[in-house]
Length: 187
Image 1 (tube, rainbow, N blue to C red):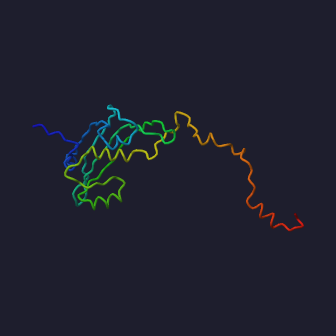
Image 2 (cartoon, helix red, strand yellow):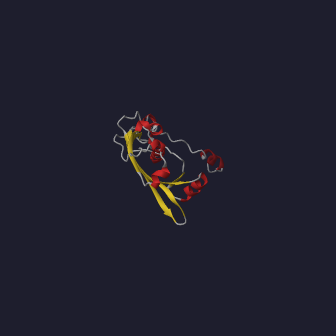
Image 3 (cartoon, helix red, strand yellow):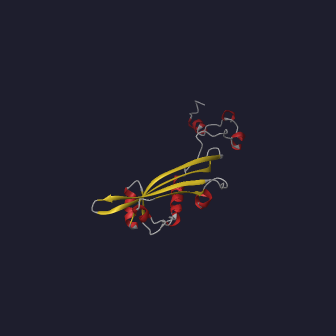
């Protein structure tokens, strides 16, 4: 009897972890709406996101095993350089461990303590949504080239402003007060 293929859009994390199962595949970047909306321009059809998920159970003394999901994903997205405003290819390489716990309170408490992500275990989860969330978090806050390919243009205000040395010298605001304080025989 053939095993039913696992649907990553309706993933039973507990079953995957118990079987120490693996899933892998790719999705077009355009299928991840929020990520596609964060990139520069239109998303080419051939921009894939390669992903892999591995379930794991870690034994705990005197308790039920911990459920873990090792998630990796690779993609390359175009963003706008905040320095030169040109296109910038940003490689995204995701490698995360996610622990699943039985309730939201436990997830919140452990998430503050652990470096790894902690989520509440649901009967089914959408793996594509989790991959998209993690890739969005991996985007740089201020994307920019290490060295911009084109020289940075000077703004119009820099060209219109006269050089600092050509500015007329203004009288000091307290010069008149100094004249008033002088004694009549000093003037």
